[in-house]
Amino acid sequence: ADELTQAMNSFQAATGVAADSIDEYSEAMKNIYAANLGEDFEDIADAMTTITQTTKDLNPSNVEQLTKNALALRDNFDINESMRAVNMLIDQFGISGEEAFNLIAQGAQGGLDKNGDLLDSINEYSVHFKQLGLDAEDMFNSLANGADAGAFSVDKVGDALKEFGIRVKDGSTNDVFLQLGLDAENTA
Image (cartoon, rainbow, N blue to C red):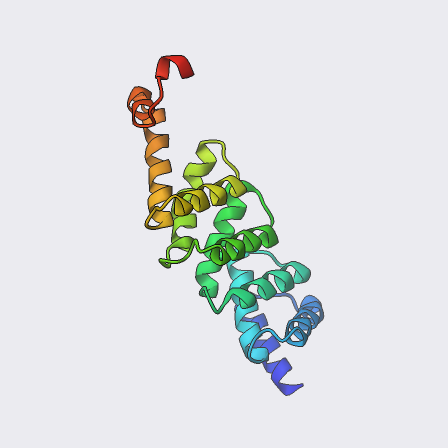
């Protein structure tokens, strides 16, 4: 009980959560602990603090779910870095935090992080996928297809799509279509 109280005090001090909602966060912390996630209450409080600060979400059930996802991925990804990528996916594609975590987990399980650049690629290239009218699933499918086709890293796939977008925007589409082996006049 003392450990939980200390952890909640740390969480409240770091996030500025109102005292009248602290019981809901305490329940969330207990639920996370009961799910065997986190080393102890202080560890869970640290993760919840990171989630709350990076998402600006003060809904205890949302913080609980995001914290569970972040702790589950912690063996592969730093919580701060995974939250940056999750926030990018939320901001660019309008998906939920849970959907973002699921895509990242599925991508990692599918080998998209073999070079340790999946989260960086999400942060760098999401905006470019969005600008071309693609959604989050399209982005991950493109990265997976590129990796399956022999791309050294998903960063190279993201960079290729970024270059494609730049060339389409600046009007040098003939160059792009020629590189793709297409006839620009017949595809317009």
